[in-house]
Image 1 (cartoon, rainbow, N blue to C red):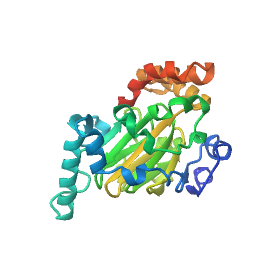
Image 2: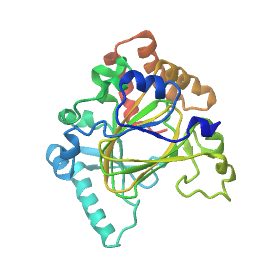
Image 3: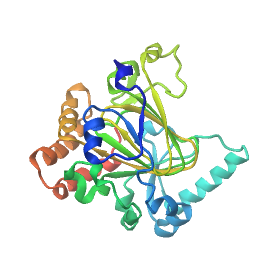
Length: 299
């Protein structure tokens, strides 16, 4: 069954919204949209110098160590970028180990620096339900990482769909279908104990039943990760990206019901908010003022 559901991760040069929803969103099949955002100014503008100029003194949270543990610190954009430059230089000299640098992870960047929204046009609104369109970038979470940075195997906590936008560098994704969570030795609600890139089958023998698929996301690509899909993410080099978690009415109901499967109580709150928008058509402006704390939420 798993092999039929995920025979491979499809790559498409272009999909219109109708085909995307009918062929991939509804059945829950991942797809890599090659070059879908290749025209964005962000691909040439977003670098250390640019962010130092537009937001150098802005304070941001960074995650220390294993991002699943949620250990945070705070620094300015400029300080972080200077540290990142030193880290990359030390990597080249063999004085640092890949994956040991703090990760700027899940930062609501378009709230912090709204002036950079213009760098993400033309925006693919057709890949999202219409309810999200008015202020879609409000829902974005930003990632800036050094080579080797990793987000361990997990699924997105609200059972949202995920569109991942790659701006700079390459990232490797390892995806595992949602129904194979039983093979993944989950610890807490959404994090797996398995290193999907190099699994220890002696400790985790059931993981051999899983059917992971690997895809490399390059600048200009957009990756669709369906609701509940487990994924591990490894930065192959210094990388800049952001993702947007979003629901359909069906996944909002599924996310709301997940409280009966052990989801944190906070998840019920956030899923009910989005469900009320999508199902009852309450205005996204009104909903977002209560939902925005999710952008810094760790479960």
